[in-house]
Each structure stands twice: as structure tokens, then as C-alpha cells.
Length: 255
Image (cartoon, rainbow, N blue to C red):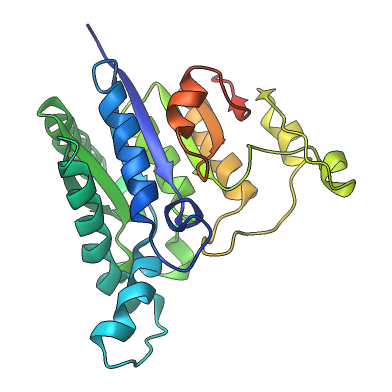
């Protein structure tokens, strides 16, 4: 049976459960869902959280001193983040691998082919690629926006069936419902220009994205014929519940 391919994007707020440190419980929750779904779906993860992981460990390992340069924090936090994924997933019989990509990788045709071939080999051998931006060489001009754009580009390159973006809301809310403090989710959309009219410009606590960057990712995915689901990653079972239509989230239809 041909498995459906899910590109799962995990934002910093999901991985920290809106706290100041990476939540092992949340990573275990994600692993349990992937383990339960692995016969029908194959997963590729785009994960933020390296900087959040660094902030958690750097004071312990650096005599209480602070480091404020984001590229340096990402370099410190990335191995910690991968270790947490590896330890929790391995206990569930899942194997992980790390892939660091930068924006320029998607502009070079040979590099695009190499990325695609490598990740397809990993997935075929039951390894879950965990992709992050190569923050140590990134500059503000080429940042992916909390990895949302990276997720859209990767989903497109790897011909995913669904792009699931986990955030800290039940999808995209109507502007009117937010104005009255009673959020109402837009459950289905296909016209992204209309969807843009509903969003504000705010970003999340730890992340650098916001709904604008999620719609940007959905735009890339839509052009590639891929559906985008924006779900509440703070909730337990958010992947399985979305797949079984047991939760409220925004589904952006493919073109």
C-alpha cells in the first residue's frame, strides 16, 4: 500500500507548549501519534525550537552567562533539540535523522535534487527526517519566518500529500470573531487573498512567524497541489484528531 506523505511543521510555541522550555511530553505526544499512523502515513518534520532549546540549557552549561546572538543560540540548541527528539522517538521504535537547509539550497537545481534524493532514501528506510533552517549561516534577509516558508518549500519539493502546520490556535480565526473576543475558526478556504484579509500582523511568543507566514507557506503548497492544514499543536492528539475530523482547524485546499 502506498503511504500518504505528511510534511509536519512544528513551531516553537508547539514544542514549548507556550512555556520557556522544550516540552518532552509534547515531543512524546507527537511521537506516539506518528507511531500509531506509520502504517498509513510517512512523516517528514520541519521543526523550529533550536533557540528555545538553547535558552533552556545555555545558562546551565555556560556558568549562568547569557548569549543573545540568535545564530549562536541556534548552534547551541540544535543538538539538544535533536537529542530530545531522538530519545523520545527511539523509545517508541521511531528513528530520526537531521537535515539543515538554507534558502539558497532551494534555488540551486542540483542541490534540490540532492535534498529530494537524500530525504526519499531516509523515508524509504523508515527514518524520520527532522529539518530545520541552517540558522548559523542565515541572515535576516533569508530567514524562513519560523520555518513556515521552509515547510512550504520542502512540502512542494518532496511532493507531500498534506502540509500540517502546528501552531497555538485552532487554525485561522475570522477577524470579526477576534474583535468580539470569541474566536471562530475558518474551517475551509481556497482563496488565499480572501484569507489574508482575515489575519492580523502579530507573531507568536517564541516564534518569528504568525499567520502571514503560514499563509505564505500554504500559497507555496497550493501551487504544488498540496493541501495545508493549520492545527492547534498545543492539544494532545492534534495530528490524529485532524485526520479523523475530530478537531477544529483550518483546511486550505489545493489548487
